[in-house]
Length: 100
Image (cartoon, rainbow, N blue to C red):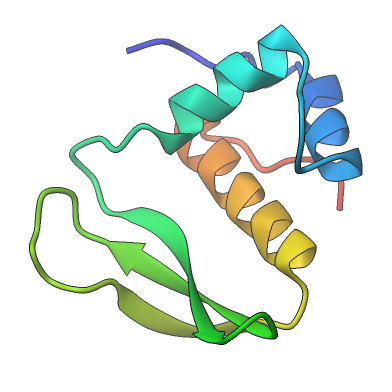
């Protein structure tokens, strides 16, 4: 497993400023690590109202079961993506991001 350097806060800032489109090579590498399913449940977003609402869910890797929805709902896809980014950052580094 590759490690994420928790001191690379500038990568989180880059993602927050531009969650879509082309990213720097270091951020793209980080995103690839974050998006690769492992053996543990991982966070995903489920669109619960077309183009208007997204709900945080937990997905069991390799399971045919649908994602388990939580009570965390977003009306902005950007806010939802940022929330998942922070959760995955903490899961992979063991540290919370010091930026909101």
